Image (cartoon, rainbow, N blue to C red; front, top):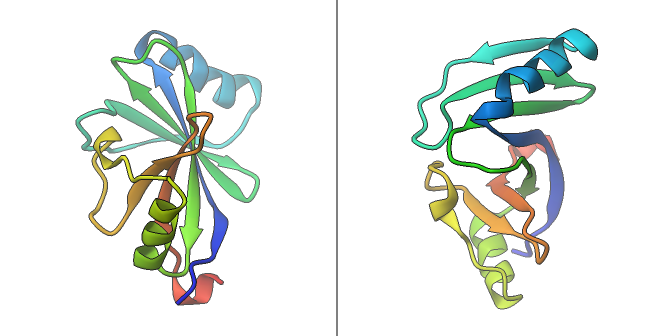
Length: 126
């Protein structure tokens, strides 16, 4: 099976702890978007807020050990194993040590360092 890719709806912004409260307030109070804190159990993310952003979801993740913000994107595939093998042949290795995720997903980066979570879309998700 050939791997196909498409963008997912989830966007994560990794925010240093010292800038987190002001960033959440910006999305909630300045932009007036729907912002809600969500429970999280993750060794690298201490807090997270879900923001409805049009058809997308922006996750504001508080990370205690970051010096600057990063944007991480979701990348969907129709076949996770074929996609992972294809990406490896293209010189893109999984970097699953970045953050804890389920075993059927992978972290990858583009040449500029943008992080993507690669996961398989549901059959009815196109």
